[in-house]
Length: 307
Length: 252
Ligand SMILES: Nc1ncnc2c1ncn2[C@@H]1O[C@H](COP(=O)(O)OP(=O)(O)O)[C@@H](O)[C@H]1O
Ligand SMILES: [Mg+2]
Image (cartoon, rainbow over all chains, first blue to last red):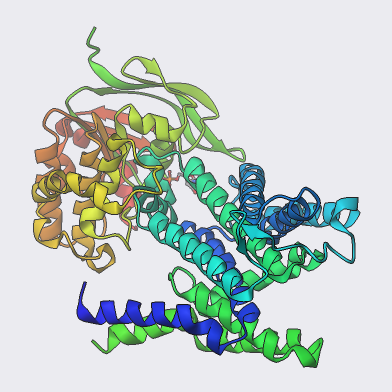
């Protein structure tokens, strides 16, 4: 590693570790959760070329299951999160198996339709708490002894999950599997003619993406101590598309930047009520028109051009 | 038992909404030969390729490969039997490096293609073999180049190297010299001759000098049916061929 790189990562690490002393920790944790959510979504869109319009289903399913099992069964936080993640992955397998043979817009429509069914279930089933959602979910004690009600402990716990999740995505992209995924995205007929049963690779990408989206949702529930209908609403599916495109799809940092921007904006503009949607929409349209490759994508192109 | 024909079609037919693109084709490809498929645009050559490799399902008829009925077998399985195709439009992975293009084909034999937890560095043990294949097609100095940056003729050479990585018994090449300048045509012609050792090649080709240079057998396809078959001398002396093929390819 070059000196510059070491310096870069060192600075980033110091910033990440000291951030909760400078910025409101709950905001930071929320941003980390959504950044992980967007990164998981980008694994599918940016690296497998599949546009899902139903990722709220995975975030939301994990959010509810983790919330319910932690609150009503008294599961420890790490087990609750694990359960939510696995459930989201399993749901991803079902969605994927039904949608993967479809191309382009049909794929998006099927994922949307399936996620609307999950939304419907969340509205109907008694354990989700309907309009109120699951409130006052206890954060509990990590491994039985670390008190997560302390925002600082909770922050480092969330940061660890985030680093592991994003690390897994990085590894997946740079793995033998990632090579095949790139090949399929770039030229699917050629990948088939080289003997790859492409549907299986796409399905695995879908399951991984769904599970990681679930990990983000489960963690978010513990952070905000709340799982609600907005987690499974199609707005949420749209928002993650927005975050990813805004930051730059197919780049590792893009979705993270996009998520932090969107969450930050929502936080900052929260007082304006329904105007938030219109303003973020306007910013989104402007960005897409100005920076076709997203913020990180454009920066990277600029960097390449000037060296 | 060693069959003399590696591939055989029986009454192979494909219709598109009533339009018959491939019409009752009975074709045998002899093992170890270079077999050319020629014919005017729209004759059904690419459709025929798509049928052979299961990219399209036939409306009627059967396909036998090494004596095995492979009709309706999934395309990826056909590939694993050793029949590998190229495409009419160049088939590379533009944002993988030249070396990675070849390695993607090689990596299947490691059995780690679903391993998302492993580093790409675990594929480096295939680099020597990939380099060797790149040498075969004269691309050894381009191994680290991003494929999108290769000139067109080199991309087609890379395609051949990638196909070779599958160690195919039967290579199907769809217009391998299409859109190339003189030098590239000569280079690719030599390359095909070189890689045809110990292999069977079926190729669609418009360039008649390439065809006459390389092929043992030529089949002329017109409106989905076989018009003539034989070596170059036989086929080129056939008046029906002269009229049909030369006549209608003069304006494309
Ligand atoms: N998917 C398709 N749907 C409808 N018609 C097709 C399709 N593919 C090919 N055809 C038609 O079949 C005929 C043969 O096409 P093709 O096999 O590409 O010819 P060639 O490769 O010999 O130029 C053409 O008339 C073409 O329009
Ligand atoms: Mg053709």
